[in-house]
Length: 169
Length: 169
Length: 169
Image 1 (cartoon, one colour):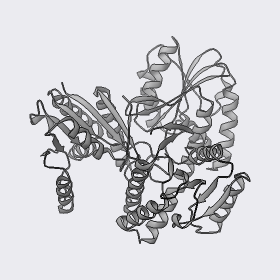
Image 2: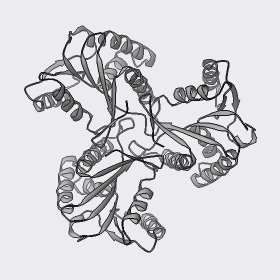
Image 3: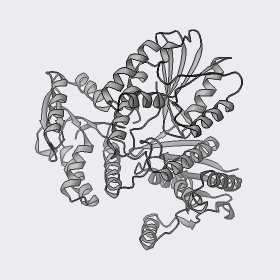
Image 4: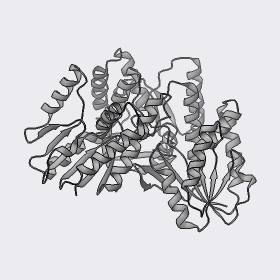
C-alpha cells in the first residue's frame, strides 16, 4: 500500500509549493504526476512554465485519469492535483456526480495498492457561500467526498492557510 | 443550561457523519432534531432517505424554528443544522438580516436553558470570494454572526476539514 | 523591523473584534490604521459608526495605500484590513494583478522597516468554489499571494473560525 500525505487548502494558499519542498526532502529524485488536461495553448504554456520552475531533480509524468497504469513502486510521487484529476472524470461522465465519484474511487483504489511514497495536493471548495450554479455545486460535492475518502486513508494530512502548513492528522 | 458541542466546517466536510458518531457514543437513544423546512417532494424524499440511514436507536423530531417548545431535558440531541434553521428565520423575516438574527438569538437563548447534551452542526460560509448576490452576502453575515454567538457558549468546538475533526475549543 | 501578528479568517469570523482586544491588551494607546477608501456617503457613515464603537483609548489614522509615509515607531498599530488596502491597489492598477501585487509588496516592505508592534487583519477568500467572474478570481489570487507574503514574515499567525482564534504560527 502507498504511504499517503494529503495536502489540502484554499486557492493560493501555498499547497503546491509546500508539497514540492516535502517531496524534495523525502527523495533525491521525486516524480511530479501532473493531472491537468491540456485544454488549450495558453494552458500548455502554463504547464511548461511550472515544469521549468521545478529543478532538474524532478521527473514529470502527465496522466489525466489512469493513475494506476504507471508503475511507481519505490518512488516518491507528488500528485498535483486531485481537483484537476476529478475535473476530467466529471467532464467525461457527462457531469454525472455519482458516476464520476465511483469511477474516480475505483481508479484511486487500484493506484494506492502500489508501494509508493505518495504526496497528494487537493483543494477545499466548500467553505464559501453555496454556489448558485448547479454544476459548480455538484463539483464541490464531488471534491468534498473525494477529499474525505483520501484523507481517511492518509497517514498525514495538512491544511494550508496563508502559506502555513497545519498538521491536522 | 445545555452542554454544547458545536461542529462547523464546509459543505461535504463530514460534519453530520462525525456528529452522529459523537451522539451515538454519548447516548443509547439520541434524538435527531431536524430543522429543514420541506419545500417540495424531492426534499421530502431526501429527508426520508437520511432518516432511513440512521439506525433504530435514533428518534427524529422535526422543528423548523421553535426549538424551545420541545422538552429534551436529560437527552442527547443532535441539531442538524443551524444553516437550515437560520434559512427559515431569514425567509420568514422577509430577508431582514437584523430581524432574523434577533429572533434566532432569542429562540436560541430559551432553547439552551434546558439541561440537554446538545450537539450542533453548522456551516462555514465566509471563506470564499464575497458573493455578488446581495441576499447571499446577507445570509453569510447572518450565519457568521450566529456561529460566533453559539461557539462562544459552546463547551467544545470542532472544525471539520476533509472529514477530519479539528478540536479548536 | 516590525513585530507582526497576522490575523486571517472568513467574513464574520470575528477577526476585527479579536484584533482590537489584542491591541488593547498590548497598548494603552493603540492606533487604528483604517485602509478603506470612502466610496460613498453610506460607507462614510459605516466607518464613522465603527470609529464610535472603539473606546477613547484609540487614535484613528486613515490611509488607503501609502502605509509607510506615517511614522508609527514605538506604537501598537492595528491595520484593518489588508483586503481593503489591496482593493485600492487593484483598482488603481486598472485591475492588473501583477502590477498591483508588486506595488503592494514594495509598499509593505518599506512599511515594516519601522519598529512597530503591528497587528494585521486580512481575509481568507480561497476556500469556496472558484468564482466564475474573472476579476473576482484575479482578486482572490492577489489576496492569497499577499497573505502568504505577510504570514511568512509574521511572528504570530491566527486563523479565526466562528469567533475562535486558532494559533497556527
